[in-house]
Length: 117
Image 1: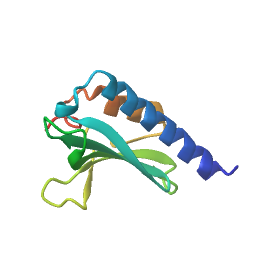
Image 2: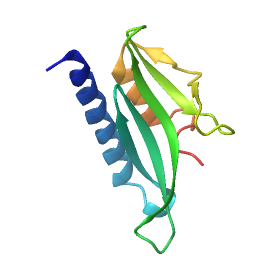
Image 3: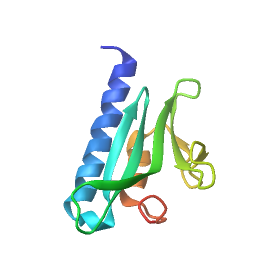
């Protein structure tokens, strides 16, 4: 197994745990956490449901965590609100060698940035 696949497995397992923990105590009408995985990154998504529906009405990306080979660091980004395809560095912890610190920031959301509409 290569280093890249180990990094990918590590980030995906932590993303899955964060989403599971958030969704356990969150009513569907307030949004459910999910993620999409790509090469060396995951994008966290908030799924929005109608009150009477079990199907997702729409989704918003809330955070992206990437591994930078150049910097050998984990990076955390927020979606740019006026440019949906662009991402901005998270101002309070833009990068770290510690994936746990980055993921804790997303899970706990101490600045109420990620999971708030």
